[in-house]
Length: 61
Image: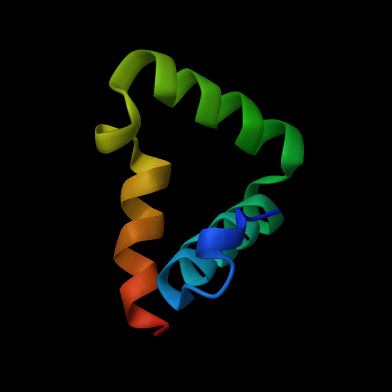
């Protein structure tokens, strides 16, 4: 689910698709647990899952 103002933003859609691929690779429970731990310990900007999504989003555009 995307907010209306980003629903047509290809970079946001690409970023979120990377998170779907992460979920496919890791499994939903593992991804969610890891994501929450990373947010708590490292914050959004340093989270490896987010850094991975930002790196890969630009490759798929």
